[in-house]
Amino acid sequence: MIKDLSKIRPSTADVKQDLKQTDSIGEFLKKNEDKMLRRHLSEYLNELLIKKDMICADVVRDSGEDKAYVYQIFNGRKHPSRDKLISIIFGLHLNEEEAQRTLKLAGYSELYPRVARDATILFAIQHKMDIWETDDLLYDNDFPTLHNE
Image (cartoon, rainbow, N blue to C red):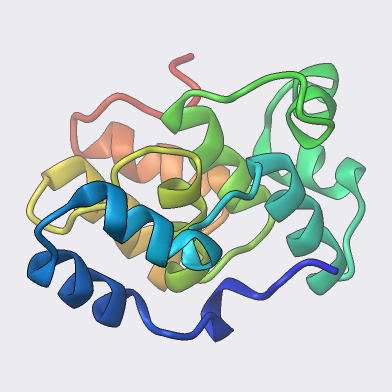
């Protein structure tokens, strides 16, 4: 069964504190092996599909991304770029916390409010804008759009 990342105990802060106090990374990794995230992005995205009561076709429609490419991401055959993943985040209608977790799990930096383009995307997420409104907002503020068209 897939664990909900928000319910993982101990907290990330607890594990981080444990890391600060360790003298050996090997010992830390061994001690905390069961607390490490080993999920694949596709697994998490499919969990979100179920949670949101959506199907992949909904994500394709609401992300503006190519159908085959989205299905390959959800099947684990492709790893999206950060911008493509952000488009999928919009396609899934994720809130800010879910969006940040998705980016982090994929190995990308979270949306950072001190980076102007990221702040614009965060604003769009917080205001429940769709992908097209977000691209318009990015374009109007002289940032590269998510679809670069």
